[in-house]
Image (cartoon, rainbow over all chains, first blue to last red; front, side, top):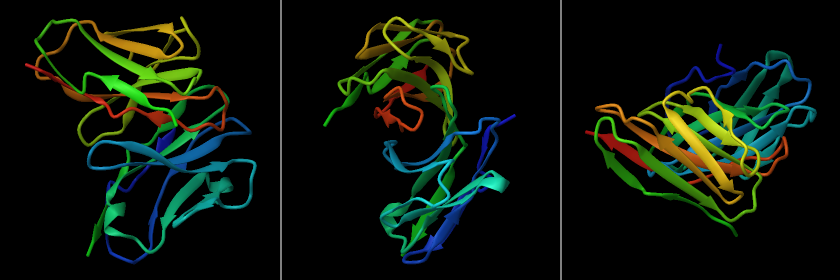
Length: 113
Length: 113
């Protein structure tokens, strides 16, 4: 069974709007860490934002924020005021109390002018 | 700032050939990883290493060998390249801490003819 699931394969939005990308995860650990990464067209993968499972407050970094719903094992990524440069593939990931991060299959975001 | 370097950037091999991919990082990170990404897909873990001379199998280790002779370097060997195989191999590293994100290399693009 997949530990991290992203059901949206592709999303298309207009520039300057807000988009939410969904992600659900599966773990037995009481403490874990959730991440979102962005892969650009060049293939470069960069870390965007992290949510620690024991924190109730949703993480925010720049125009990225998270919607953490622990009872639903859900960690959505919200991008406000989208820009053309936000067009990329976004990966959700989870790290349990070992050294591994499990990745979802990614959601392709297209931001149109 | 540090850097994680993968060589070569592009690799063309022949069916049955043994091919080696290299990864170097100067972050002094403990843990290093090799992932495979097929076109339009997510990341699948091949091998990882939590310290020098340590090797841990991932979900996709069959057909691959790995070597971590120094803390700063982690190599991956495709033991017998499969005809028409095409994928990107991504190296990553992280601090040995559960809330630590990954830093990724820029990838090695493999094509087997």
